[in-house]
Length: 446
Image (cartoon, rainbow, N blue to C red; front, side, top):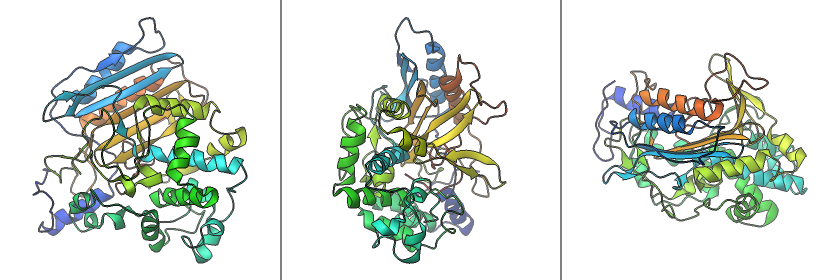
C-alpha cells in the first residue's frame, strides 16, 4: 500500500480505514527497515589465519542488508576461536557517520535472558521456587486467586496469561496515532504502574493453558528479585549476571535517557506512519525495565550467551530448567518455535539454536547460539518497522528480509555440516517471540 504521510505526531484526523491499519500495525510482526541504499561497505575485523568463518562472505552479506534498504547494521559472529566483526551503513543518516562494529545498542527483549538468569541463580540458592505461586511472593502485585494459580515458571515461559502492558502504556497506538512514542520519551514508569496495566487487563487464558508473550511477566520477575533479595533488580543483574559473564560494554540504564559511549542513532518508521523515520536513541527506557531496557554491544551479547550455555552462569539443574521449553504455535497450529525460561529455541538447517531477539523504538536485535555456545551470531539494526502494510494491516514482503536471512544463515550455518537434530524443512531462524526481527504478530514490545 502507499505509505501514508503524517504530520509530526498525528493520525487523529485520518479516515477510519487508515486508523484500523495503524491499529493493525500495533499487532504487526517483524521489525523491518527502509532506506534507499547507498552502499557503505561493511567494516570488518578478522584474524588473518581464521578458517572456520568465511569473513569475506559475511562482509558481503552484511553489506547486502544495507544495500537492500537498511540504514545501518553491526554484527559479531563466532565459531570457536574464530571471530568476525562487521558494520555497514550509517549510524547517522544526516551526517552519514558510518557504523562501526563496537557500538553500543539498545538490545530490547534480549534483556529477558539476563533477568531469567538472575532469577534462576536465586532458585539455585533456595530463595525462589519455580513452581511456587507468585502470589506467595508478590501478593500486592498479583492478588487473589490468580496469584495462587500463576507460578514463577509461568512468568518465565510466558504461560501466565497475564496481558502485556504495552498497549496501555502507549495508548495512542490503539487510537490511530503515534503520539505516545513522543509523549513518553522522557516519562518515567514505575514497575508497579506497568504491572498494574497488565494485571488489570482481562486474563488472556487460564494460567498454564496457553502461551502469550508479555513484558508484564518480566517486570514482575524484576520485582520478585527485589522482594526476595532486598536489592534493586538492576543492581543485582549487573553484579550477578553482567559482571560475572565478563561483559565490558553492557548495562541497564535506569533513569538515563542517552546511550553511553559510541552508539548509532535509532530510527523508527512505524510502518511508514512516522515519515521520515524519527530518531529515538534518546529515550527513558523505564517502560522496558527488566523486560527490555538493556544496552550492549554485539560482542558482549555473544560473550553472555556463550558463558550461559557453557554453564558458567547457572548450576546444571538451573541450566536444564532454562532449556525446558513449551511449544509456540501459529494460527494454523504449527509449532514455530519453543520458548524456555527467558530463551527461545529455533530450528535451522544446521540444527537448533538458542537465544532471543529484541525490539525497541528504532533498535532491532537478534542473538543466537548453537547449543554448546560454539557458533554464535549477534546483529543490531538501527531502523525498525520499515516495511509497509497491506490493506488488512499485515506487513508486505521487503527486500531487507531476504538479505538479512541470507546473512543470518551464513553466520549460523555457513561452512558447517548439518548438526544432529537438524531438519531439512527447518524454517529460517526468523521466528522468535519479540515484535523485533522475529516474531508472530505482537504489539511493539521490549
